[in-house]
Length: 185
Image (cartoon, rainbow, N blue to C red):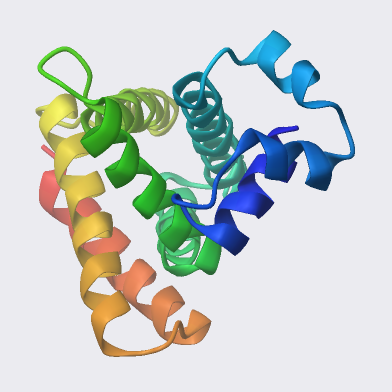
């Protein structure tokens, strides 16, 4: 159902995103959708959560078991590739749309995604530092700088050229080596 919703969203945009279209696309009854998702908001929130988790798992799987610099290098390149992919661009639009339509002082989807990513990155930094005997003076700040560097690079890269994996790999290597050389105590 969520996959069908994602495909309808990609094909028809937010204005054409309806439960009727999702039901036809998924070949299910519209009642089935309403039984699980009482409104468009709940459906889009579930879609957002599902896609965020899917991307998180994909990124975190890269570089597992490798050294600190190598694992983060591979994750940086993968994150940039995901962000610049058509699905990544659609995901950015979905986050913006949810923030505009449903967000308020209590709910901010982009901030929640950012906070969740920081928690994951800080946890990975702590584990890697423990396993490799590396001291990082401020884990939370290091995680924030790491994430902001990737997001900034993806934004800049997305405005200048088509995605180039070799160039992204070179950037990720330089970024990782420079970053970890700079944050070690």
